[in-house]
Length: 108
Length: 119
Image (tube, rainbow over all chains, first blue to last red; front, side):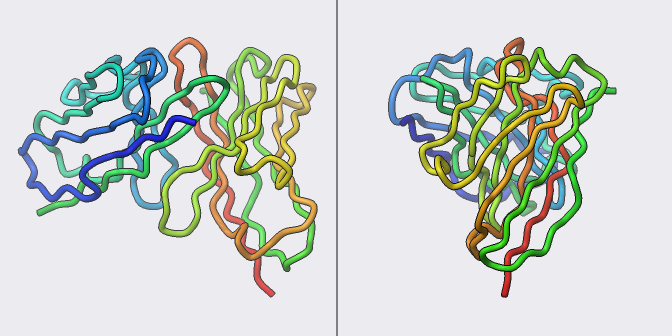
């Protein structure tokens, strides 16, 4: 089973800053099957990025994804107040879906 | 509007059985998979299993195999997650999510069902 490790566990930044979140896989992941989700307190997760770099419907262009193989990155170019949340990466391989443990993005 | 609507919160005792539901609307239910995801209090997301609406083909996470049963009734566009004997450790929020092969991601989520198991 592929294990996804996200770093950092918590990221403290200010509105307007640039955020860089990492997702590292225990073995190579087909980038077509790498997705990122945002979860705000009391809400269900929301799909942000699929295929490692494609934005989902209605996702602002300040969100971008990149990476391949075992290293993937979610970048938020200029943080808005509503971006402070928990972010998860997720992959699919060999009939198994796994999530990373999450990165909490908090206001500094 | 595409949506998944889940059944309401449940409070159960250890050893009791439970079946929660997830009803899809606004899209062709049989063209997509439905995944179930657990979130224990204050913790992250865990994939439990996934079922294909068209043929009920089912895959469980090894961690949940034998612990839960996932099923679907395509006539009413509804997926189910059930337990035969609940444990306190089953206390969590359970989400259903539509997995789209077009985007290879869970693009529509239910609102979550909170299950509390306590004596």
